[in-house]
Image (cartoon, rainbow, N blue to C red; front, side):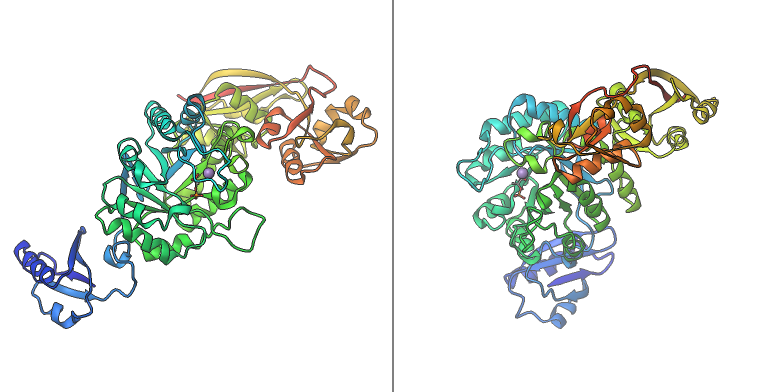
Length: 519
Ligand code: PEP
Ligand code: MN
């Protein structure tokens, strides 16, 4: 039952109502909103009639709550709850981005990732130390040592840390060192663990079990909240369905449903939700559109060597490319993602402009904009700090459009870089040069590599829109017969290997880029 109190009511009248309700064996939870005060009643209210309660002078309205979950229920608390984790507010206008590896593996690994994800806009650092693995023979985590390494990395990078607890026996150490304690899918209904977490004040990230309904998730939440800890954040991380293409089926309808059912913040984990690194970007965008308050993304500096969940982990540079796009989606939803240092370049990820920007600013977040003018606009409006644009090419001459835009006296050139245009033959890992039968690339790049292509007479040459698009097509085809002519960056972004370096006919082809800033 929920009681809405009259506006401007005296504290003494509220107290007398409280006493009356407590005498009836009910627990009273007051919620003080900006406009209204609401009392949530927990306990058996079957003997209490609405009329009887309405007659009390402090009462404006009485509502019966049908749902079995009370404290997590939005009717109990009409306004969105904002949960503080260190200095990060979860559920506020700014979205939270929790990033980091599935498991903490070593001090170097977690420290390197911590700095990178922080630079690219993450608000919290994740890392598993106690790993609930399906197989007892798989890596079980570095346990307490892992937690200490995570804490140290979080402290030096300035990020609150998130880690999973698997057993109430570790509660004390988690309460002391971890800023947001995760309850994983496998423990969502470990009720003894949930009750223990309810007795401390630390925020809890409660992930949905892979075979649990939303009501069961909220009932699990009640176990924590009913013990006194109201700091719970929900997380959709995919459920088991008949589909086997993805590791789980990410149930994005859970987001608007949970937002309607509950006042608690809802995060989405696209990494466990799909099990596939290349699905992290589209599912993150969809999660933002569905109304999520944030994302949990697995980031690993060397996914192929990861001790757990490598196939679903993205690299720091992939994370850096995704973040500016997510910021645009967040803006559409009236939300905000803050990214500390961003460099805009004119071009697509994997283009030579991208390569120039990455070479000059390896620790900055890179965002590819369509036109030269877009880069200048972003700089002039203050949306982005630094821009990288081409000014000339050995064969094609000056880029006149850029030269004209540079005439603006509010823009200054702060650096320059000359990049040799080096083409590579790239393919998926395990492909041999001798097995290649199809080569995809942009017509210009094909022309630049005529001598090399003459050594591959059995290959069909297929023109493609851009070199970077050809590289992503090769990654999607994932066979041993196709290759692309593209840049080193395009190979890296699409996780391709280089079959042959420097296949262009002439080494005398350079593009000069300038770095621009608002004066
Ligand atoms: C994890 O976050 O690494 C994890 C094991 O998650 P889940 O409980 O969702 O499988
Ligand atoms: Mn994982």
